[in-house]
Length: 261
Image 1: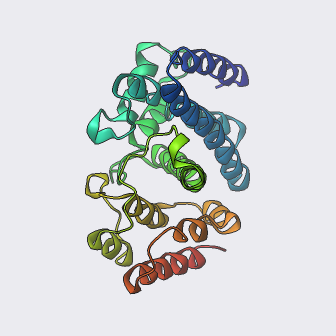
Image 2 (image 1 turned 90 degrees about the vertical axis):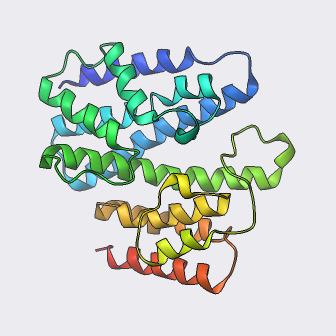
């Protein structure tokens, strides 16, 4: 893979994403959210691969995976006006479909295409399958970490914006902004378990699930980033203060501390 390939991918991505914008301010605001997210995931990927000492070719593969990981979000939201996969479609598989239908990766080797497409297809899954080859697993874990790092940021910023002015808030709130947090969700985080999206009932459930994402972080630099930016502390501020939630939060903080070099 060459630098020129990545530049062509960036140019196509810019044209493809802007083609979905129209006259609806709500749709445009949510599409811009994902466009900005994609750019920041690329930045987070750069942060990870620089610290992990990747060679130049592998850096290009990692950056391509980050760039395209959510390309399916754009047709998804235009068609369904939601980012909730259970209510619409699997956005990860749709991202792969978009790339394949447009022959975007055809200039790459079969091995490079396989790594990129598989990593994108799996980035939104609860868990990675155990039968991945080591190289594919490496890139799949990388994009999952980079994605989560920015979603922490997005969750915090969206919450701030919504609470500041809920009446003019244009972004999708995927779940009710209820003050409660489902016991099953909190217990799962305490037990170190990942959570199925379809079990979420409130925004606080989603926040608690996101705290529990630390159990699926794979690389030391990602743990360091989480700690430096104080993402967990900021998300925890919005959760109800109960003995159960406090125990879950404490468990998450302890887990991160143990995984920082």
